[in-house]
Image (cartoon, rainbow, N blue to C red; front, side, top):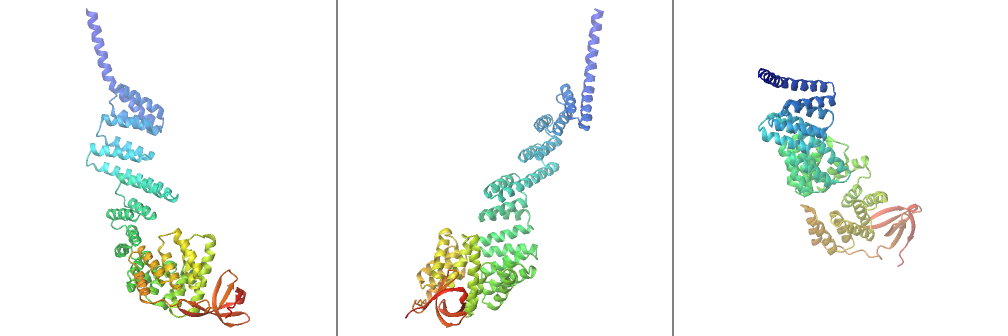
Length: 496
């Protein structure tokens, strides 16, 4: 009996010893795991932390150590499992939430990282560190998405770029740059309604976001809402008073509203801020032209010729001014320059609608109306909503004495316009005036065939050994132009 009692006492002592030693053994394996991790011996660390957890599966410290060891050993799946087990032990563990979210974010799994942050916020509300972690995760997510979406846009995959960025903004909506970029993507695919909405969100987040105000003004310009364009452009200019492009945008908006004096002020400032910018010089010349300040317009266009002699439609614009000033010969020379430029450019880009339109306009002014009509009708067939083509077609019909078709083309141009008062003025002009009768072929006596393949109907009024002087019709008025014989293939004189 005595031996049985001694045995039981010994067994109890052993149990007590093992119980007391158990905590120390767990601590031993945990500390051993930390030591191995510190020396980057992750496999050994994983084994040691595992031993600690076999002794005490509810050890939060050992579970976190094991998760970190797996993570450092790039075994992210097992690391995530261990972080989640640690969170089951302690659902209020800020460190576990942050570590798990950070790991997902570094892996590029931003949506999962934000899901972890959302769990943390639900379990630990109003914690500033969680708010900070959320911002950091969102920042990494947005930067990554901006890079990927930009690559898609550059690869002409605009709809995919928009979809990707939209999804990111559903999770992280409070980034002004991302909202602005989405607005730019919409703008690039001509979805102006969604572009406007995104840019307004960007401005709501950051009212001093200069570029958002600037792009919003361009959206309103495209929508034909010039009053709103003015408002947004002025907001942008208030933030950055030395932005030449905003001054140019303001000037163009005011020009469309026919507030020419104000437009000139802004456009002059744009040119002063960037004196070699050909677009700004052209804008200033154009507002001078529309305000009938023809000498000033010629001066600006002349500056533009020095910088870029082949600026699109420059010579047509100059020719129209010279024609208005009754300088017919100079007008013809400018129309010829525009025609030659368009011919050269069309060799490399034969279907460009703007080039074809400018070419047709010049040819019509030079008396080749049927060829001009053939070109512009081809443009309209390919681009039925190209407003400028209908304006040119109206000029062709007017020149060929078909007032009804000229008015019809203007009405179509008006349908494709917003707030363009000059079209109403043109319609009114055509309705009020009776078009002069077309000069008959018997009056335009001679046919001149040029070596470049063109032909002209005109009246030879003087002949010299090296040149001929022709009387040609421009609109309803006559003008004289000189052609050198080395440019003429042959002449067929009209026989009375």
